[in-house]
Length: 128
Image (cartoon, rainbow, N blue to C red):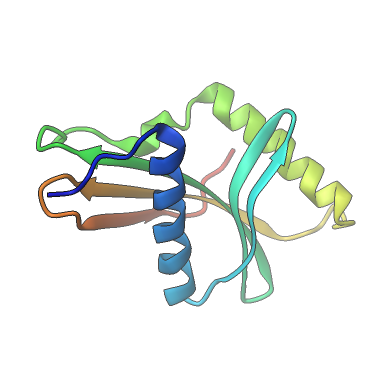
């Protein structure tokens, strides 16, 4: 049986580590992890095929009662506004021009409390 995490940060860090492994396995180069500003955070910034990819990770523990639960729904309007602002700041700080090509994705990590195994799902090319 999976030990429970001490707090949400620990659960989130574990999910982000799993998401990084998943992305690397699929050809992404992780450029930055937990890009933090006062107004928000981007979990993962990666590059693949010369395109910048911003990734939000949502991690949950499945205690056997999550058949209809979708962690990606936690990327609500407020979260989207914060992500837009942080992405724009990142692009400006790193001198990407107005025509910079980038994509936004959400990766969900659902870990079973019974088996300790995680299921990863990537929702690609989300419009913010």
